[in-house]
Image (tube, rainbow, N blue to C red; front, side, top):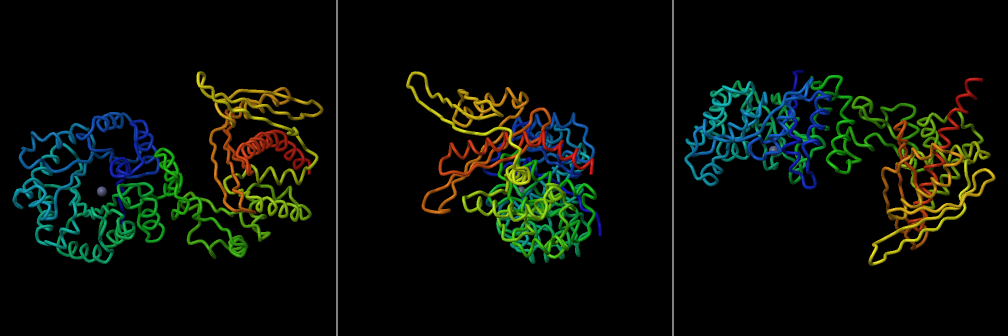
Length: 533
Ligand SMILES: [Zn+2]
């Protein structure tokens, strides 16, 4: 199988997605990550359309990229401008990019109705623009806009557009399904006709309006395309673009093309990194790279996967840098709990007599609305408390929170906490910018005498979910807290559940502090214990 080049347009096409707005710094971060993943081309934007795009090109020029070539995007010259005077073409040249993609009309209707010019004039625009850019930019890719629709309506004209671009020196002809409405068998047939008739190099650029962008892209490759244009996580306008996180593993792992080599193991990390920078929720069920892509819940599945992972997995998760996950929300099977314990390297400290107690406790908490998915520190803590019931770092007693709004002063919140640490009773009060913040500070104050390092914990994320109708008609609040040790960089997440949001938050915070203290003291004890065995 041949080698396929990946052309990423997350920063240009992908940024058209609703809710995405990249700063220059965001773009630079994504460029570095794409380079690390071995993506061949990175399209950074349309230099003449926006001054911030220009800035990205300037900054990108200073980066020492190992794998990627920076590309710029633009269009063929304006119909009443000469190439030398066209700001769009000159913008591409001035960007300093070593590659560029320019689009031109391939559908006759768009030429006559959209531009209102003669068909021949559009052909001239294509050939003159390509020829001009080729003098300055090493690689020039020509994108036939609406190519497949144009081909279906006027095959001869669409082919003529490609021929002119090729003769003018284009390095590659990218066929775009701009409206995303083509079926895979149409793409297949058109590609077959083209490769039979011409000796051109082809690329493919699909949009996902029919939910077929990935399959259309793969089919185009099977029929001879050697460059794939798409975006990380399928970001893009409307229904998005071809999702590179799905296209790449299909091409490389299933069909045997040479794409990213060993770097394919970075794919999961790339997907999550880009969703983080884009401020988009990661799609949990995204094939290959989603958190749940290798998540097993049913007891029978779990025991089968533990014996032989190929029973319920199409590939091994590590091939794309993902990992297997056993969801512990379903506790019907002993095997789920065992698997989870193994994941936390706790199987050695749990023995047969603990197991029924752990399962019983988990089931009780699940009935109350707990879900330990995403709150793994709370899970670990629960297990540790069953194994070492005698160990306690502090005992929470009472708390109180007051929030008041005074018209002249605004809002203020005060929290008090009463806890027992050893034989000392600590009663502390603190102010915060909100109830959770105030409880957090007051708890730290209560603990800091005995555990002075407690101050290095920071609350980094806080999520609230209302769980409807668990036991009765009363809604239950589930709070997830993410904490970080600012010294070691370690992060963990804990859960609290209650019908009262403040109480749920308080519980999640207690778990967070408790987990931290367990980690600090218990890990060492475990190690000592096992090293003497
Ligand atoms: Zn596009």
